[in-house]
Length: 179
Image (cartoon, rainbow, N blue to C red; front, side, top):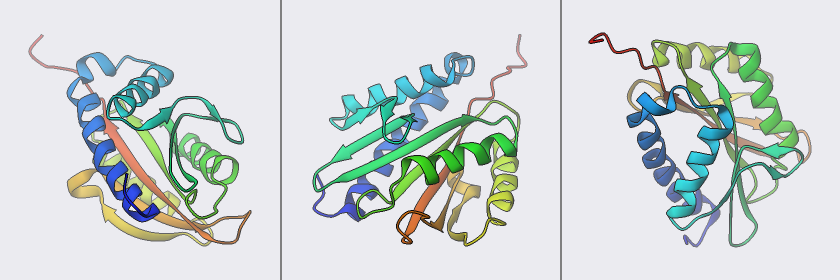
């Protein structure tokens, strides 16, 4: 495992991107799965990669995807279907005000957006414009065009420290025109 929280996060995100690619490649199967099935699929692949990953862990509520590591490393993700921005905002607040404590090593997480509609890029950019209007929100990284994610930071209400959230959309749209 990496020696610092920042390096752990970088390694985890590289693994997550590979896991997400598999979910998207299998969209002919995954597009009709439930949120819990998709979360369990992701956790299973993370565990197979040797990570201490879990689903529905009790950290202030039922965390969809959690990964723990040395030195009190706690990473968590809330997953939501792309069912409108009010629904995504609810997931964002679950993640940032319920699950993420905001202390060192537990100050980074992810909003996984399961995109079942056409044009995931447009949906993600629209979500970025919604989230950018929140109080004390900073856009940290914008990789929407090439990697379908962006990162924001926010002040944790509990600690007053900045917390970071990666917002990642998985393209599960599947409607082949050859049938």
